[in-house]
Image (cartoon, rainbow, N blue to C red):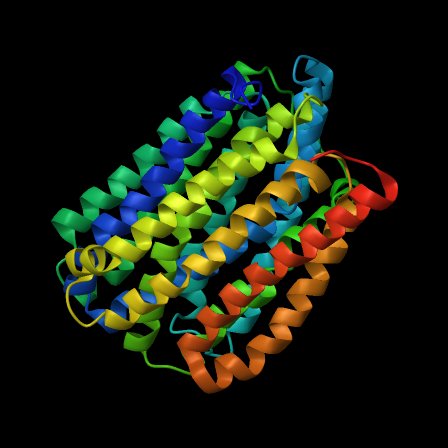
Length: 410
């Protein structure tokens, strides 16, 4: 396990954890401010914008956080390869961003969201574009995340300052969305210029289809869970009131603390694993399970107190959702350990895709009646059920490969 926790791991861990910690603290700090100043209904509209943008960032990320990091980690000292890989991924992400924004604007034209087409365009486009310009995957692969993390954090601090001193009523929603979107966009442009100069990258246009095709298996595996995780959240506004949606969103944002912790560890370890065959899966499991069990205990013991401090009374249902989610948190740590520590790092993208699609389709079918009849509670149950199902499928398939083909030792 000591070989995994090396300099590259800690360089990535510091940068990624600082960004993710800030991404965690910002909603925690702004939640009580915005829920009171905007009101619960208007705050729900802002949370919906965050959901739309988060979905877009996931789509634009594609599978490049896996295939590009896996490839660049092995070639980070070869300048020509570095230039080519970055340009190819950048071209591919631009095409994906155009595709996503076209789809989401088309959907918003039917008034299924609380936001107008103009709002979605002006406040989602820069956020999705900022994800491309930040190119966190590149810095993760070369284990140099600190400066980009500084820029990302600076943009979020600007947003927090604006929330604290300038948001006083629901009439400030438009200005709030503007600051949120364009502070990130400006910071990402600075990071783009910094990257070009520091690594002497010579941008070239490449056909985006090659990389998109190359990463399709990993992408389908990574994106399929959105069928049961994000899609129900996007469907809820048509089924519940703004206040009910806010209660659900508050719970999801707290639950995502566990997701974030797992994500930081996985992304920090991945470049290390890419260049190291001398590790055991049990070492990855120990790291992930330790973190998830600690977070689960915190959720059970402290969620009442934390929610009351952040948003006050009236969110008892959010607390209930958070506490029952701990089952899924443990399951998620097992899933991440096997998926990243075996399937993705060993280039078994097709096997990864097959498991992900199977479980996601099953869970999405289950989600239809659950969300339709039980609304927010149904969406939470689907999330827990899916994570348990993923853990079971990965464990069964991994041990089948272990015993039948002797591919990997625990």
